[in-house]
Image (cartoon, rainbow, N blue to C red; front, side, top):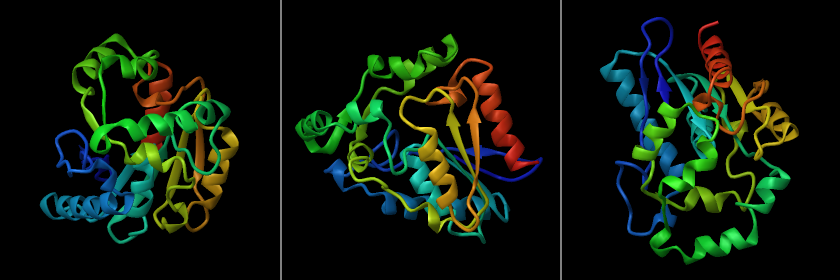
Length: 230
């Protein structure tokens, strides 16, 4: 997600290659974080030109946060960087036993052409704490086919380099996120770019506080918007 700064703000989301309404290479595993970052650099430049915006704010979540960190190496065009729900160097015990496990990797290897087809039940756990309206929207819009590249990258942590970032940063983690340990987020904040980044833990929040029911979502957006426009 990319924002313009200050009062006259707007938000733009872009689908990565191998997801949503973007292009789909024959082999989904050929999608790379560096390639996505290069594509998003073009998006940033386009927005700056067509919206006459000197700098943008970048928000990335999970694997997308790795892309955001690379974008934020460009201090000339990027004003700030928010990284949310990130797995950096050390997976939690739950993550180790689930999507970081050898069994899950073996399952990924069985998927044809490097793509993961999803249906509504796949998102049930992620949306359990979300309002009914969000669950309805997500069930109708999220199921589809996705590149497996982000799922493979967690087997070789860290999958991105936060030290590349030069724009001011904010790390956001849900207090009850089963995938991210607080110690891992603290290490990410310390390793982020020049001078590190601030860490905001969302009290009572799970893996994706931004779409959870109040007060998790309101605490999330208050933290993010307060960082963008203090």
